[in-house]
Image (cartoon, rainbow, N blue to C red; front, top):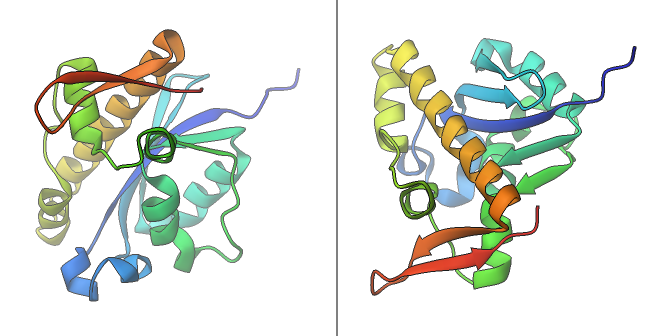
Amino acid sequence: MTTSAPILIFDLETQLLSDDVGGWSNIAKMKLACAVTYNLTSGEFNDYLESDVEKLLADLRAASLVVGFNVRRFDYEVLRPYASKPLQLPTLDMLENLYQTLGFRLSLDSVAAATLGRSKSADGVQAVHWFKTGQTQKLLDYCRQDVQVTRELYDYGKQHKHLKYRDKFGRLKQVAVKW
């Protein structure tokens, strides 16, 4: 019996903030704190710390599709210094998809709030604080929650062919998605 390559929902958190590395043009210097994947086939989460980065890269490369939010511009850039070759992965970057349609960027939190009716539990600044203070489980739990939200948005978009957001006037809007 052959098993097909999994679809992985993916997110990571960093050790450093953009201010710590000289700005957003230096994302590759932010260093991996942790990552989480969710396998849509098996229903299993996998947690990774910086020491597990080789396993993370192998798992991402083995996937039939990697689904995330801003993964091409951020997560893959964070992983670039750890990879022996460029990360050329079959990817559905939901933010990229939304940007191509709308012409502007939305946050994961804003799309989750409008579409799912709930917000994220924290943010990247808090995540870096947890890393720096050795609160690894809180960090992993937060990253896992982001992966869960991303999975729910992916599932919602697949089923309904749109996601929701609020415009600058607070009006609820829909944006078509193609996945």
